[in-house]
Length: 436
Image (cartoon, rainbow, N blue to C red; front, side):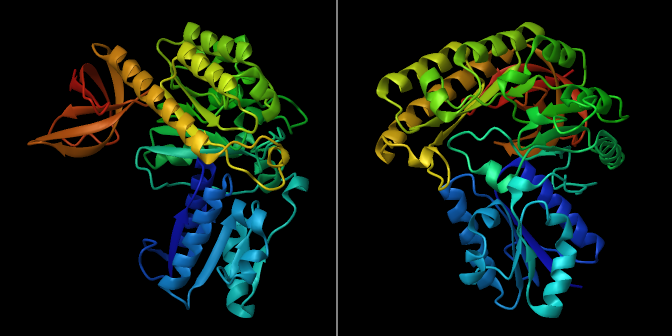
C-alpha cells in the first residue's frame, strides 16, 4: 500500500481542498500518514497571501524532500500559481498542480510514475469553470467546511489572490446540497460555508436565482444539519433584506466575520475597498438589530503604504466604536504584481509591529468583554473534546457565536448539542458552564 502525507497552509478553502485530495487518494487505496512520517508521496497545499506564506510553503516542500528523497513531492495551490516553474528549477517539487487542477491529482501521480514529469499550471485570470471537488469526511469531527465559491473580482490593491485564484466562480446548488446530505449522513452537525469571496456566490449564474441566502435556506432543510456558519463576508452584502432573511434561519450561527482591513476612509480608498466606514458601521448596527449579541469578528491590516499616524488613530477609534469580538491583525505584506507594491511611502517593519501590538491589546480587551457579557446566559453548545483542568475532567465545545465553553463532566459528550448555563469566565477567556 502506497503512503501519502499532506500538509496544508492558508485559508479554509485550502483546508477543504486538502480534505478533498486526501479523500481522492484514500479512494485509490493510498494509506494517509502524518506529514512527519516517511511517505511515498508528499502533497503540500501552498499559500501565497503574504511573503511569509511563500516562505512557509518553500520550507514545507524542502522538509518533504529531506524526509524521503525518493518520494514524489507535489506542490499545489496559490504559491504554485505565483512562483510557477521556479519551483521545479529549485528542485523543491516534482509535480506542480495549480488551482482548478487539484481534482486531477491521481492523474498527475500516474503520469509522474510513467514519465517522471507531470502537473498543470495555467492562467487563472481567464478561468471560468468551477473545479469539481467533493468531501464526505474531514479531519474535523463535528463541523465540516464546505467550499461553495472560488475566485475574486475585487482586485484590492494589496492582494495577489485574484491572480492566483482567478475570477469569481460558483458551485451549483444541487452539488452543494448533495455534499451537505452526505456530510450529515456521516455525522457532521455543523457546516461552514467558505469561498475566496463568498459575497460573489451566484454572480456568474445567468439565471440569478441562486444566491448566498438561498444556499443557506436550502441547507437549513437538510436533515441532521443543525448549524450553518458563514465564512468571511464584506459589508456590502449585508443589506436589510439579506440580514432579515438570515435572521429567519434558525440554524444560522450569529457569528459574522466582516472583512474591514482599515477604519480610515482614505486608507480604504488606497486599498481599493468598495465601502467606507459609515457603510461598515451601518452593517454592524443592522446585524445587532436582527441578532442578539452576534459575534462580530474582522481582519485589519496595519502599515499599509501611506498610513499616517492620524490614519492609524482613526482606525483605532473606529475599532473601539464597533467593539468586535475578535480582530485578526495582519502587518501589510508587499506582493509583487500588485498596485500597492508600487506605492511610495512604504511603512517600516518597526512601525508595523508597534501598530500591531496596539490592536492586539485592544482585541484582547474587547474579546474578554464580549465573553463576560455571556456570563449568566443560557447557551447551546456543540461539544467536541475532553480535557483535564487541574484534577477535574471537562468536556469542551462551542456556542453558536463560536465561543469556547467548558462543562465539568466525566461523560463523553462529543458531537452532541447540549444546553448549558454560563457560570464563569477564566482569565484565559474560557467560559465555564453547567449542564441543564
